[in-house]
Length: 604
Ligand code: FAD
Image 1: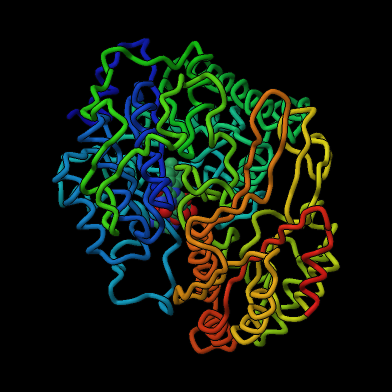
Image 2 (image 1 turned 180 degrees about the vertical axis):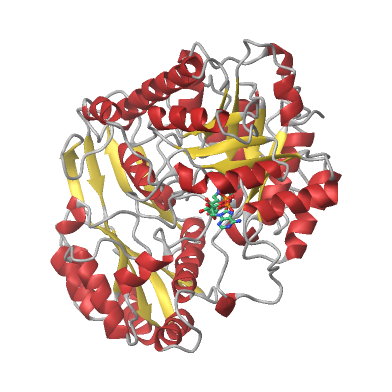
């Protein structure tokens, strides 16, 4: 199969193209449903698809298997992302060898997480790979021209090590020059919403004295706007500037109405594509979509845009049977051998891509439906503290005893600390403010709360605090709480919970010891809404599979935090102790009519 560069070179002078990025889903059912989604999205004729790579190789097997599936069964030109830091060199070697053996000819060569200091370097990691350029050189040395190699670029400057004020693409330019000179064939950018900045960046590159960027494909990375909250959060985390024009458009619709927000997002992206294409005089004619494993926004953009159209000659021919059952022997190494598209699962229903909202169209991070391919994805490529190391140290200092940690959680609740390692947003949401006193009490007792919601019983869907979804509906919530707690305290609380059938719980520790008073197939809907002319919508569910996936991640965040401190320091020892002896517990109270019930129960 041709490489990305060969395919671009073969396009006619007026032909544009687009590509899709997918990530390996967190749950097995998410993988099954991604296969169905990939098959549908292949019908949109992307020039190629990208499969991401979890930082440190955390998704190595899944990434490779999904990439191989795209290549060999869906006939899609496939680009595998590959990082090179914080993992053994053998993982890189295996990934490249397996990619080649499976016919994959495109690699996006990335650095990944910042390299660890000597303190945390383990002999299995190779010090040969400190930056993406090292990986580009290595691939060229080992594989010659077999792979078409892409590298990352940052139109607003690289964010992690600089404050937003210091961010400047010119600072990173020498490194992009180095990566390109080492053999990169195309450039793919970080997401952005400020079209002017991208256009300036493109001009700077094209005019660069090295001449390296005159004709190289520069492919802008575009993120569809799915919900208002996720848009703001992502822009903040990636230090992407939101131009006033975009904000004004979004502010013109209720931020709680996801469907209207999505429609504005489609308009914004369609306009960005149009401007980029015309103002770069078609030098930029390819557009990369960060799909987040969702399909509808993309389908709407392609439907609306005059620029991005499927080039007919690239129509892929799927080798998959049209029936609803697909067996892919190698897709998941961890026990799931047969990927079957469950005929009863919502994702296996063939839908018209740009028609009605699909079943998981409003992603809800780790609280969403774990069967969704988009389940759990909040911030991209793996466990992260969401802030650079120096900022993390400044924020959280060096706790040496558990009461210091309690203090941090309480500071977050009372607004004197913006973020915690587990927080999904800066500061408390207005609805959490309502239960702030109850939460502070729990944290004072050493129950470190990482998620919660108060009960509500039929609040209008446009309510400024609790509202979501289309107008003229009513929304409901059960109260829930999630916290880290020492094992001894948890076991006492568990006894109390056993005697009350109005409460359901999950608990797990870092070793994966798991406890619950539910069966594996039980599902707790904790947020639901009733709207005109549609079925009940349930965007937030809690069930075993998603809790287990989150618990693993929540404990891994402790380890990530620990990496900031020298080994054998008081903070490092404290975190080891917490990691080894605490449980993560999630409790739902079913009496949503009695809004104080959970907090009364937790008076320990
Ligand atoms: P580099 O090019 O190595 O640059 C990283 C930093 O080091 C920059 O500040 C650069 O200026 C500096 N630098 C580079 N070379 C040198 C040098 N020789 N000397 C001194 N400083 C230098 N992450 C994942 O884990 N998985 C993914 O699948 C993934 N996909 C991505 C896709 C895209 C399109 C983008 C934009 C990012 C992606 N990332 C992914 C995130 C990426 O791994 C991080 O942004 C990472 O921190 C930097 O990667 P890089 O390849 O740009 O690194």
